[in-house]
Length: 175
Length: 116
Image (cartoon, rainbow over all chains, first blue to last red; front, side, top):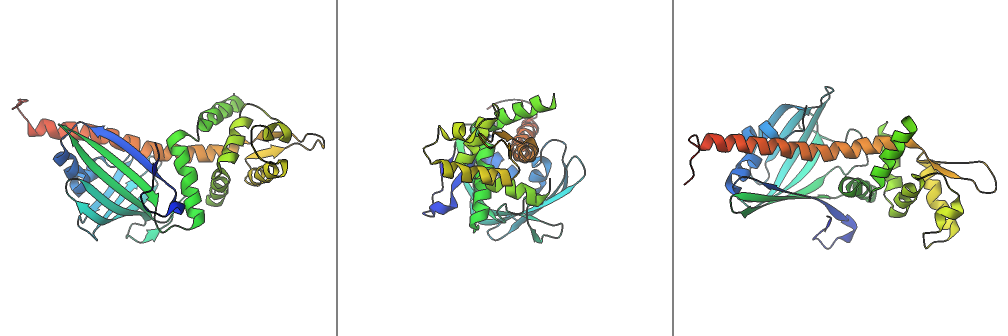
């Protein structure tokens, strides 16, 4: 599941990797990822409200978005585009922000990396598209990298099954 | 859970040995000696890991001088589990929404449902 970071900087650790095949041609997938009016229609989990989706899609440009969690908490974030190679690849720096676009820290985990670097690739497979997202800490301190690594391990494997065992254990305690 | 608490828990979980220790404790309380068995490290090294876990509130240790049993403490783990689950769901549910959205768009593009 995990991919080695391609940079020589081993200390940056392993990347968090997500792959998904979408049943749509690449040009369409590219469009829905890069145009604010499309992103604003789908980029949020179930039960979240989309508050804002402001897109300036160019190298150096910003996508600024706002979501509201099901329990009514606002959540703002920013992407700054570093590389755009239509319709194949986007590299961006991601951070949490406030409503005005000021940079903030993760609201629940202050040691989470302030900046992360995401690389999105779009590979055409006939009428389908394979989408890959790799996610690494960017200009992170050692503490931030370790925090990311703990989170990454949990997200990908549930810490090698630990999470399932723990949840079963918690259920037992509560019964 | 407070942000500081979550950070301490994350730091404790950042080490694979400590994650393995927690996984072992999920099947029941046990002694330091028993815990150390599967790891190729000295007892003091294992004890150091246990101290980090104890400081993070992830485990508790009994007072019995002889075998000081270690056991899991659930609360901080619940916070972490929720946090990880939040991230996983963020992507999975966004992508599910994108699947539906793509279908909707493609229906609109081909109103007669005909293929070339």
